[in-house]
Length: 389
Image (tube, rainbow, N blue to C red; front, top):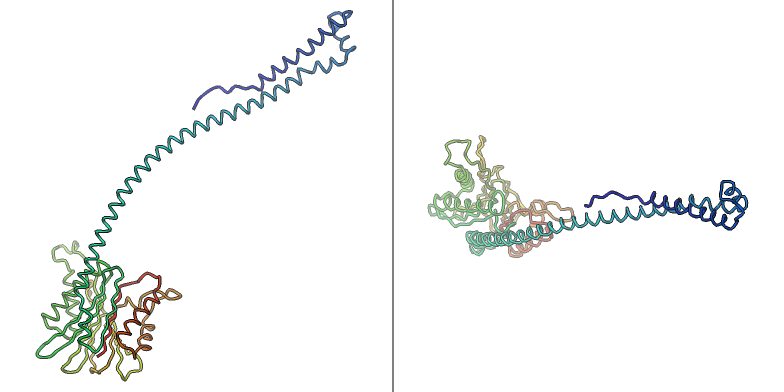
């Protein structure tokens, strides 16, 4: 910014106006002195001129009026000059601001290029993750029993399976087991802690633990299976690599499970659940019957209180409907008031549709879920298994 002394035109113009104004009475006196030659040029002559020509009083005031007029003109010029200086200052500041903006613009362009590069990297990383997750989904689905296996072992059966985030923390498991010439059908529905990748890892652990417990160790009663599962999950996630307990990894993850066992020889049905119920309806029942599972989860941190899993046994009745499910279905938010679907509404759905086939029931359960959820994000992983004996 330029530094200069601020010149004032007000006083300069006023003095000029006064000086210029004195010319009028001087010229008037000289003119009248020449025109009225009989009057001497003296003080008395000056008085006589003013008495003979009163116009001189007006002419004598010219320095005052011209000084004032020129002073105002100088003042206005000062204002104009100040405005011009302000404009120059503003223009200089504007130039500086433009330089700063230009510098920022270059920096933004550099940042924009960097962001574009990072975006490409993120998109590639996301694509790689998506590819990995899709591969994990195929592997997880390959482990699950084909629904046709259930249909070939029962009169009718269906599976409604819907992951929240591509891969699921819920799974189902079925096997035909022969022990001491006795044949058993074992149906398991499990809900692991969490969903997505953590939940999927838990399903793999649960799946292979069931393989070991039921197929290799030949444990077939459901409460014993739950006890073995609880112990196996706890052991699987207890770090044995650290002798220092303060460094040991603490894993609280576990699962809830429903286990239904059909004893074909004795015509008995055995059920045990870890925080999960069994819904069933015999041909003689008017409404869905509920067997509540034991209030204990599988795995998690060890506690002093011993977990007890209760077995429920009842007679095998032809044309009985059984439903095993995770809490993802009943916990789904939606409806007009964005509330959970709830167990009561689920039982009502099963009661109202009890006379239809299991294939139709699967469609009804799917439609009810989607109509309730609509645009609401899915709350949790969902699995519902229906069996008619």
